Length: 193
Image (cartoon, rainbow, N blue to C red; front, side):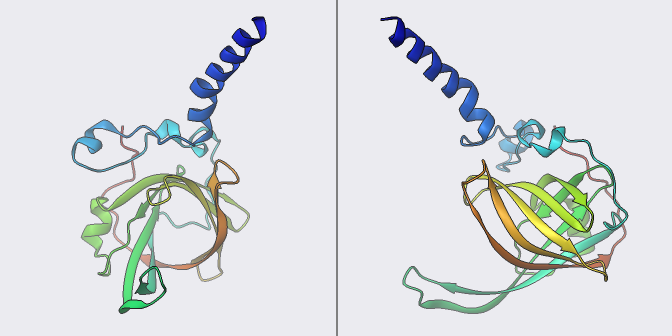
């Protein structure tokens, strides 16, 4: 009998404390944005939010990093259903560890769109040597991911791998090149509350 109670208590602890903290459950969303249909994870859901951040001059927070990707849409059998399409997205970085990663768009982002910060999500980043690591919530896979990118001599960032959080949920290779472009910043990055 004592073992049953102990087992139930252990199971209860695992379910109430363990699962939410490891990232298997969906995070809480920022309420004012959720009311408008935007799913932005709360700041506390990010593991990198707690880490000490030191700014690296390799990242230009007065620029936008834009990726231009060729996509071909296929069905489940691999048959092409739509020919080659160009999709864009961008990342903006702040000097305090906050980044904004846009969703994919079929039009090249304008300066107004980049400053509006409407189509995407706030996330966190760090830089070690010449590698940038971004933590964001992947809405398609329904878990957090870390993207790792090499900062090149020309200032562009080549993202080459990802890992899911919790560890072991996903890992793979990426091939996204984000080119640095100058921009006039009219709105600073501030994580929504």
